[in-house]
Image: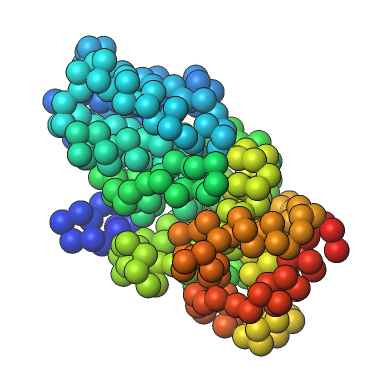
Length: 364
């Protein structure tokens, strides 16, 4: 398999996405960014044991004094102030200057935390994304969204800060457990649903290969998802319009993650259920016919993802959704489908939202 090179087109802040096997073993872009700089690799213990030494060799670190490795705790519940301060404490203790480079090696928790640290340390330093999970490779590593969670809302504290490079080594996907693969497939299904029905059909037809970890099928899907996301981000970097469609399923999904306690549901699991809910609400609003939510529900289930949310009262969901970045003065807004491949952001009548929540939760 060859290495694919994509570009996030943002003028002087444009950067490449490299997707393919063996990328952890070096590359001119990564070595060039690291040359002559202090380098901090932010990761967790499990990922560091698997890939840390390869990455340290790849960046060409000549002296241990010029580099540090910062290991965070695993899990969405640790994407918080404590982990962020662990990064800051290590950078300050090592006297890292504003020319330093932060490299995020891991999944979405590592990438979001390291990226937010890079956005704010000495008012902003360069960073590189080296995503090692499917979800991070197809979604969270691309686009410059960085954040930590608050107990009342997911990703509510953060900044837009674009990386200098995204290095997605698809060989790392071979170490993922089935649950993590399924979580990544959720974001791929999202990209197909909102932007490319043909891609959605490819994912549906190849679901068995994707879930089995077929290297070629996964690499092709990572490339297509990155193409879609790079195009959207290039057109609307700071989510003033078009980029909001990337949150399809996320209003419901983030409510599930926060309400259940971070880490109980993987992000992709919550997004999968959230897409089922959003499609159901789209049908109740008369935007689509019943065939679309039925198809998405079947695709989410085939990916090994849950299709029903927790059996909470609708009022609890609505309260959780009111603390959402798309909400307007506490009123939730949703990314809905007008057709497969065409999404829109809008509010919805409370009675229809409640109907969807009752129909798509374990309590119905």
